[in-house]
Amino acid sequence: MRICFSTGILLLFTLSSCITILQGLITHDNIVTDSRLPGKWMTTDSTSFIVQKIMDSKFKPTLEELNRHEYTKADSLFFTKLYVLSFRENNLNYSWFAGIVKIHEQYYINLAPEDCLNDSFEEAYRLDGQSFLNTSSIAKLEWKNNNELSLNFLNGDKLKEIILNGNALIAYEYDPLFDSFVITASSNELEKFLEKYGDNEYLYKGGRIINLRKK
Amino acid sequence: MKKTVIIILGFFFLTSILSGCLTTLFPIFHEKNVVFNSTLLGLWRYTEDEQEKFMEFNKIPGDRKKELTPNVNNISDKGYLVSTKDSTGKLISQCFVFLAMIGPHYYLDYYPAEIPGQKKVNVFHKEHFIKVHASYRIDFKNRDHFEMKMFDKSFLDKLIANNKINIRHEVVDGKNIITAPTDDLQKFIIQYSDNPKAFTKEKICKRVLNY
Image 1 (cartoon, each protein chain N blue to C red):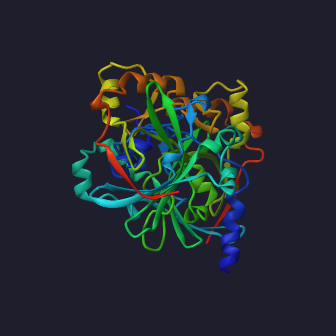
Image 2 (cartoon, rainbow over the protein chains, first blue to last red):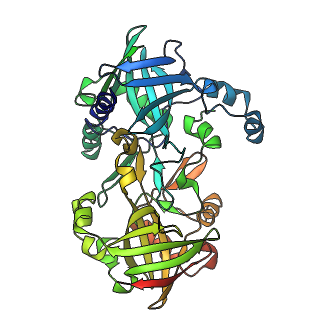
Image 3 (cartoon, chains in turn blue, red):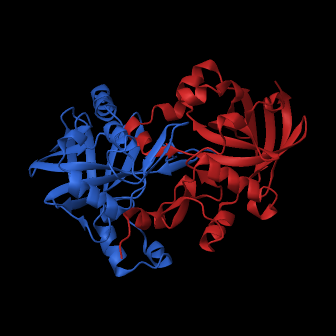
């Protein structure tokens, strides 16, 4: 059972690169919620995911934290609209932040990994002495019914090629020496990009697809 | 007012990039700047946060070069695989490191290299963490002693805030992420290389073993 579980996740997540974006797509103005999202989900390969509202998760801020950071009412409202997606693989526990945006009647999900903890609750990937830039990715969210949904990720390799060839105007940085690529467009620019190209199936072809069914 | 999710989350969950060290998307060196100095090979002791630690400089082993891009592989014979270890000798992390001559001084450019524990991390998760470069000025004192000091990110942040420098950056989490290309980074380095305020306290490294 455990072997199937792990293999399923590996297959899901090793198909092609996702597109990495520096600024998240979600803003105070465009974030929406969907009551169908929280719960336990399973992929077609029996991989389990748990989706929680952030205020029901381990990331719920304490009152002390809220006071310290002088949140506005809008900030707090925004925070309550976020979700946490978690799963376990190879004895590591993953947590991702997720937010939903609706553009032209189409829902998109913005995913940003937060931690990857071993059983001693130590971060397993971002180690002392190493430096990383934390990015997020975008998938089209398609509900088949209330208990089935599909996450279609933009094909990162394809989008990178299109951008580097000058065929899509969006802000990015690329270092050819270390092959580092990141989209630096603002949230607003990302939204406009998806308004224009979000329905273009070509950008999703070959990208990761995660099909989920509610447990 | 629009704010990204990152801003909100950032209040709680700072990422490793937001420490005091200046990190950059681009390396600080071009291939032509890279030099190899065999003096660095060996095991070095230093103190950080009042704890004794070790840095081991090795040449990049052949089986680790596949982790580098073809372009970086062209200069990998001049690079080092640096292992950071705690006082018990336990491996903390590794980086691919290149020594570069920029202006009149030497600098080390650190780029993450995966240790076994990181290899089992989900690929999709890893893709969201772009490896970036951390840079240090290095001063060789003698064969058994060198000092390295990081660029202080707050120094650059102040220059940016006061419009005293024009360097490409993105603001994420309310913090400046330096996305300037290598040429611009080198201009900054050369301009401020002798300004003590541009650096954090030096790390004194003393040789333990010679390879």
